[in-house]
Image (cartoon, rainbow, N blue to C red; front, side, top):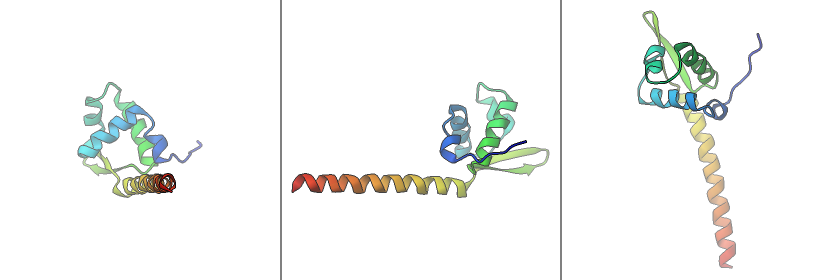
Length: 103
């Protein structure tokens, strides 16, 4: 079986995965709890969680016979850092353009 790395932006490009991530941002949940709020099956939720986990956006812990998923703080911090980098570059470019127009 071939595995491949999934980056966070690609993982969140799917609307179902974004919905799952948003639910987990509210609080940790089991697969059953996640599936209850979505129009997809539990196996589909599990597959989406696998991709989010590979992208380091969620992590799981065992609680009895269930696995509880939650947002991975380290993965979210990395995503945030990338976004902050984009934003910083955009602001710097805007500043340069604004300064050129006043000259």
